[in-house]
Amino acid sequence: MHTSSISGARWLASRPFTAAMLSMPVQNLSQAPTKRRLEASFDELFRTRLSRLLLAALTLGPTMLFVDGLYRALALQNGATILHYLFLFLASMAFMWMAFGAANALIGAYAILRGRYVDTIAMPSKGHGARKSGAGPDSGPTALLFPIYQEDPEDIAGTIRTLATELRARSENERFHFFILSDSQSEEARRTESRVILQLISELGPEFSIFYRNREINKEKKAGNVADWVRNFGGAYPYFVVFDADSEMHPDTLDTLVRSMDHHPDTGLIQTVPRLNDSNTVFGQMQAFANNVFGPISAAGFATWQGASGNYWGHNAIIRTAAFAESAGLPHIAGRAPFGGPIRSHDFVEAALMRRAGWRIALVTRLTGSCEASPPTLVDMAVRDRRWMQGNLQHIAVVPATGLAPISRGHMMIGILSYVASSVWLAMLLVGIALVAHEHGREIAYFSERSLFPQWPTFDPDAGLNVLLGTLLIVFLPKLLGLGIALRDIALDGADQFSRGLKLVVGWAYELLVSSLMAPVFMLLHVRYLAEVFLGMDSGWNPQNRRRDGIPFMQALRFHAAHVLVGLVLFAVSINIDRAVALWLSPIIAGLVLSPILTWFTSRPKTDLEGAILTPYRSAAKGSE
Image: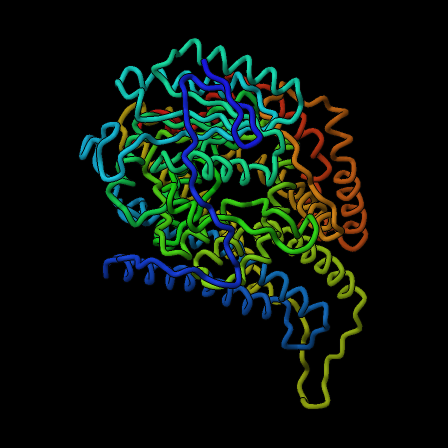
């Protein structure tokens, strides 16, 4: 057992170690570095550019049809007010955002059915070019980093213990070194972490390299935590893999990632697609079900058109240390928090900066054995969304950076719009209600000075029906495609097809109903968080709650009091205008009014029946393809 102090931190180690310094300069967003030449085949360039054109066509084409249909449905050719055109604009923006998601899912489903282009680099076959410790193009072990902040150290120790046991069985003890990088600041947390890690080191023995470090000052949070390791120890490791506190990876997956890095020296980062583990709560299990049924087609869609300009999600990815050090040093954004200061959502920016320097950022969707956990309740998901929103909005200052690849800018814009879209939807809803109220009291002029014939400003029911059906198709297309691909996989598997298919369909309907009712709640939460950010309110950096045994109903009621009130006001206003309006808004009203019950209901432990119908049909954690 060894203890030491390096760079203002307290260390525990299973064996002696020495620092291996590596320079990590802060990048200048207004001046691009000299770019490495990235070789790409004609087939790759043709495929990605064609896919991007197809994505644009499948997004803009339906949007143009929607605009034309809504224009005719509202009979705007017969005269319109500013409210009409404002509603048309907001509805079109909301539809285009949904059309993008549907187009990406459609491309992803097609790619999966063809069995091609769902990884952006070729993965070496299992056993091909097996890499031993100290051998290969980049000799040296791979570091496994576990950045933690006020987490339960028993969970991290359990993950490492399981992985170490599997590595020992494969005689691969020396191929991977474990680094637990703690940013916990309370003395109680530090003592607990030290005790648990010392016990783990003693249990596994000196054959494993396990290092624990606690920073006395957690400057720049997780990004600074990893950067601190790169500067002090990165020189000894050609690659490192970043884990989240609740993520896991199978040894086969790690082996494939390392061999892929060896075989692709132009690649700076390979991002896997973590699947969500089974959860104890209904909410968490629903998230796992949705992730495993709908996630693959979305990931495959991204992989098809993003090419070498992939993204990084902060964990479950392998990174070339030298590439990261030379090109991913994060600058501070000018100004104060929440928009200024250290970059919160650092992963997107680190990927964009590495791509700017000419490194390939790859996405592999078929590689299994990479998983993580979902927030256990809606409340915990909301807390995470608040932090993510603030980080994503900071990217407004990064998007114009000099030299970024267009797709890298696109990734950051998608992250921004994913939260701003809720404000567009709410504005569309409010303008729509105001428009209906206006139309009820509108005095219609049937003749204009320019025509001898009457102009009837009546609603076009046929056009309205087409708009409605088209919108419903776009909204539900990703979920329908996900269900179709999942049923196809079950059919190809050949084992117990009927019962597994039936459970899948029931689980799909269950998830669809509950998530649809929750959607208005997340809309209002995101609007509130957006307002807080623009009012200068910093989210801070609080530890995540990864376990819950349920939320008491009164606590859920307090959390959703404003949502219930908005739902009741919305019902009162709509029923006063017209019963038909209240009927159209009933899904939104029901979701808001029932939100405390939904949160309480889904926070409880899942029953055996819910566990059965919401069990992901894909294995989340084990093995690799």
